[in-house]
Amino acid sequence: MPFIQVTLMEGRTIEQKHDLIKRLTEATTEAIGGDAARVRVAIYEVTSDEWGIGGVPVSVLRPNS
Image (spheres, rainbow, N blue to C red):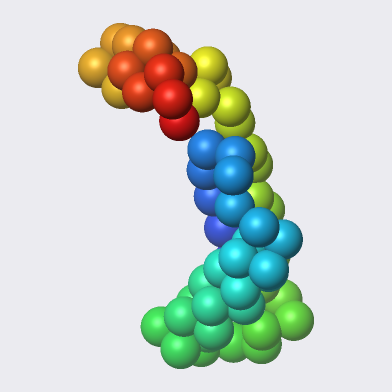
């Protein structure tokens, strides 16, 4: 059973996250076969304080984001 974990910075709509789950499931079953009902997708959201690029939190790099 495939288990897909996605980590995103917060800010996406519920509809966008639902679409991502659907498309990841479709892509997985297309690529490796199997039953879509056995594919698991988990989305984890982090704040811009919890996401760093080059050792610096995104909240510092992009203060208006």
